[in-house]
Length: 85
Image 1: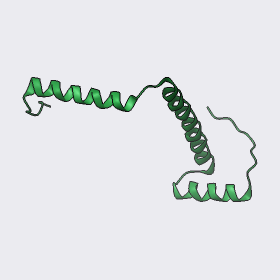
Image 2: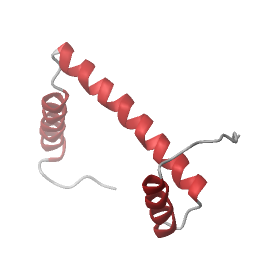
Image 3: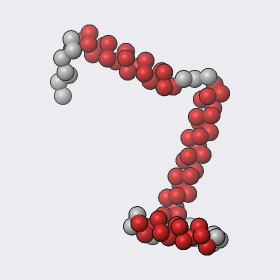
Image 4: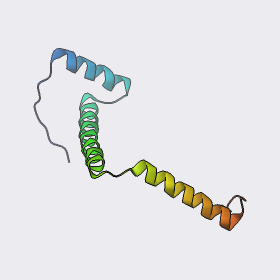
């Protein structure tokens, strides 16, 4: 579902948006929709990252530890041989 809204932009902003939309083969409306959605997602992810940081969680270290553990299990099960696909 889409909603029609009236927005005001500076001349510079709208010209840049038109140029980017054309370059990407999108209508101005589609490009603006995508840009707004991407901005909203960045805000959500930034807030999430800040919350994780405040909680003292190190997700990168946990992911690396998980990968190392999976490699050790693979080595124990497959002896360094590649898994069957």
